[in-house]
Length: 168
Picture 1 (tube, one colour):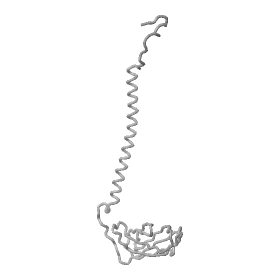
Picture 2 (cartoon, helix red, strand yellow; picture 1 turned 120 degrees about the horizontal axis):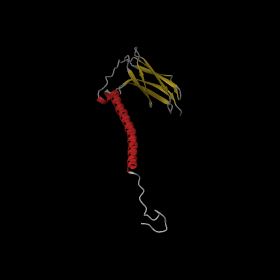
Picture 3 (tube, one colour; picture 1 turned 135 degrees about the vertical axis):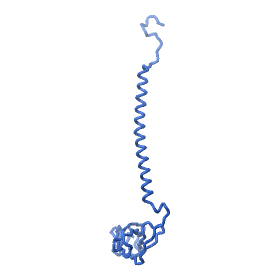
Picture 4 (tube, helix red, strand yellow; picture 1 turned 90 degrees about the vertical axis):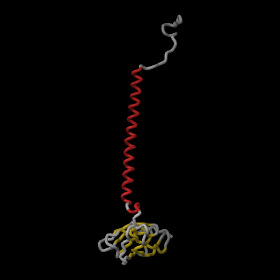
């Protein structure tokens, strides 16, 4: 259908703009390939994260061993355990040492002083020493408690008291 005076093709109704079928198919394949590449990256990352989480859980289960199994650690007492804190009095911001003797050789101990917790292992003679920073807020008497590491009942093996010079 031509209208007179408009020239060839100007009076024809507009056609929908479409690409050839091959180009459309090619465009879809390209889009899918990009999408699949993105999914591969995401799934690789997901797999690595999953392996990391599983490995962490396995290691933590092995490390916790007796605690997760509900087994009680046999407390190794000699009956001659004793400790002392040096220097006495301690001053806020300085190091202090907890020294112990009379423990079973090779025994790992946990030391609790106020809110501080630190660890040591007795040598072949049954002696240990461990230090920490004195961060006691208030001046007064503090007590160091020595426990066997892993003892869920927290049996006190030795105690020693000392004076702490705090901030106030």
